[in-house]
Length: 434
Image (tube, rainbow, N blue to C red; front, side, top):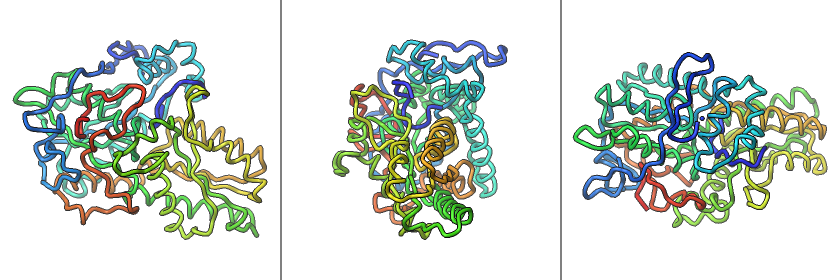
């Protein structure tokens, strides 16, 4: 991948504050990504900007019920035609002055798929699935959808909320783990959208809370347990006599991030060590998946993908392709690739795993299976609704499910959580201001 940092939540945009012109068909005007906010609204006495009264005091877990008006589904966004690709990548890298010729080095991933990332369509499907699940349970909460980097943008969603008279939103970010680009950057974009639309001030100000990071929620973990169990079974059926305890390895793949950002992920007082909460959460979930899949005796490791920074900057390792290259010498004959860091099959899954990693496996004589992401798996969709209802009902901490000892994670991000080492702290919602 080219030396362009596209983030760790699925690089699947125009420069900030610019209109992106017509859509891929040349007919419908696009929205635009908001410019960075100078500040985030914070009422007198509150320590959490832009929050509902229940969360303004900064308690790590909010157990006061909140009558939310709607759910805000927050996506990364992705291009939906060849003409969208470079404007989209400008959005993703806005403020960094990266020239278009360097962006074009990354654009070929999207060009390969006709300039279209699957991520927007996946979020349409997830929105529809959430609406069905809510209706089944008799929960009257509309689902608004806005993206960080492409149409529909978060400011469009807030304009929609304002027009409907909604003032209390509970946000679901389509990212499960703690790091700058998988949590805090979403929270910054909420602040940007409030400032851009002017909806964060006044007697009818919009307030936004966010569900906790759900890396170890059963709804997110269950599809991976199912996938690992099925993946190993598929390999054994295809190769009679294959010994899973010595000849199969499970590779849990997630997006690499700069080591300095990883070290800053999660609250500093938790003392997660070199990889921060980001690495610790993935490792804890992977262990649970292997145990619950009945595969505790099968070798596994956490690997990284989609590195996109200058060689001089350390990123989390090992790269999945490097790890694959070493497996034959360890006696492995087959691998199961688990996209543990991803909620859906967006571009990094399609390109970096289904293309590059599977090619590496073939090159080294390894049979390979890539298991599905949660997507719209019923357990995942139900789990997201459960997370919303935790905040609606003010569920006590002891009654909140978590499959690792690290959770349940915080409703309100702690001070100093997930700092971007290069940029420092920008205004953000859903957490205590540093």
